[in-house]
Image (cartoon, rainbow, N blue to C red; front, side):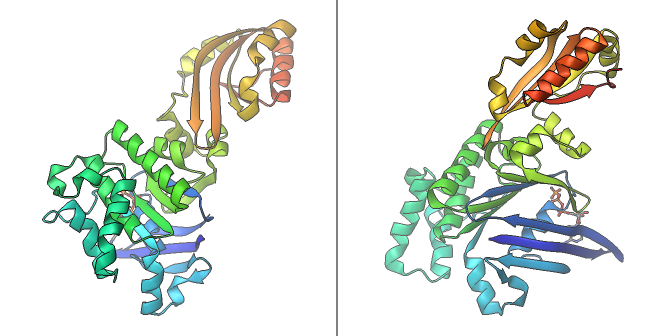
Length: 340
Ligand SMILES: Nc1ncnc2c1ncn2[C@@H]1O[C@H](COP(=O)(O)OP(=O)(O)OP(=O)(O)O)[C@@H](O)[C@H]1O
């Protein structure tokens, strides 16, 4: 439903050419939630703004339901844009009018009949849980409530697609969670496809089906969220994962422990999370496992568990134990060198 093909966007600034997006392709199927994560300056905002042509790409194609937006007349483009809502980090509400009017004014401008306005505004205020705040002004609301109004405003135009530009970045962790729950609810109950950009891995963890990691205008790693969390390849992806689960032990500790065994990170995905694998290897082989760190990450579509363990034993026993763990479907990553 959203397809970006080989998008490139350059800007001229002080006679210098800046490449903000450099050949990015993404494809979001109807009803899915995809997230683009990257550090500041990676090109995320520019990319998401290309989806509704707030930025015109320098090269590439933007397809919405198979229609290439760059080939549409301005009237046709206006219609397609009507089906794409957007929410922003700083909410972009009109400060001088009430919550009700923040939603009603764009509806009026888009041609919704006067008699239908009230029903429409009330319906979406209820969906975002703010029915009792219609008469308030934005200054009387918390950040999370402001974002709910912005979400109601976007939804009231009844889009099929919602673009979210760092919608939770200005919010505290608890409020972030409640807004993410709301996005999940509108995805599930209204069937809205969501493309979001963020620099917070917990946003990806909680609501995304697929993720793209962006750096210097390019996608450096992408895939289903579960796979990316279980098997991150690119250093930037690993850095982002470290922000939600501390995956690193000091090199000195690893070196010391490796003298008497192997420091190994075991990753359990799906079914393998239920197996008593460590108890098994200590029974079957001359290996003693000592757990150094462990965590479980709950994702939208499953669970990934990580255990960093010191397996104490001689090289032959260790090899057998590691082979056993691999055979039962556990991903193994040896830290600080291979068993000799
Ligand atoms: N209108 C513009 N004119 C010139 N350069 C721009 C413009 N917009 C973005 N850039 C540059 O493009 C690059 C990517 O910026 P962009 O805002 O897309 O990144 P980002 O990943 O969204 O970062 P942030 O999270 O800080 O917004 C940056 O180097 C930025 O300075």
